[in-house]
Image (cartoon, rainbow, N blue to C red; front, side, top):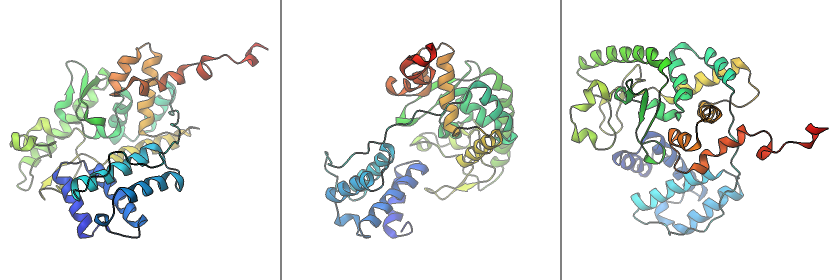
Amino acid sequence: MSKSPFMTEVRQRMYTLRYAKRTVDSYLHWIKVFIIHNGKKHPSLMGSAEVEAFLSHMTNGRGVSQSTQRSALNALVFLYGKILNKPLAINLQFNKAKVPRKLPSVLTPDEVRKLLAQVPPQHLLAVQLLYASGLRLMELIRLRIQDIDFNYASLRIWNGKGGRHRQVTLAPELFGALKEQIKRMHIYWQLDLLNPVFAGVSLPYALERKYPKAPKEFGWQFLFGAANYSRDPIHGVWRRHHIDESCVQKAVRFAALRCRFNKPVSCHTLRHSFATHLLASGADIRTVQEQLGHSDVATTQIYTHILRQGASGVKSPFSML
């Protein structure tokens, strides 16, 4: 299915529009599932009615979460609006997923120390930054050399979730390790410039047309560059991309297994822990909201629940017996 001329067209169209690879893969997945759900009928022969039925099926038959249903909806809106030029109805009628949001899993400061002690050395700095700056995994992976500001102890995050930019804190204790990582990438970069097949690093959006020399400038190189080149899916040239996010995910999963925590632990757990510990240290919720890049403070308030003693701060009468 993914190798069909139609799916190839969708993939190329998305890359032309500069969609991130993760988004491309997600959209192609849901378009494929939608087509299979409808007996492999071509999407051009279907429309809003079939989309509504499919989205309702996701809730009724599969019990998916809100975010999963939203991902499928976004994929189909793109398909019909950008590929088939048959925009879906504005007010689609379907059963919306109502799976309640889970409270985040959070590590204590001591558990964070134990986890970091078990992370393999080659991925330690990346995992430390997840906790030290409260980054999302892909925000970490996409960091570029010039995004690090040692003078103001901060990191610049471009095009985070929702396309928002922000500046986050950077622990001075990581300066030494960061400078060593930059030195390693500088060696890669010097060798890259001597390689005739090296086309420079990929740039976001239309910046490559605006700054044609930028792809080979050191500041634009990824902080966590991959060991080998990869072929650019849009232009077909060879570039040094960032490391795959699965490398960091596996490092965290390995460390958590070694620690034998009785709670789920992932890369995002470190972001949750950052927010909770920041609030516990006395930071106001608006500051934490800005650090995390949340558009709504209500999203940030979930971390205040973790800090309360008991549900909503209520003391159990059992404690007074």
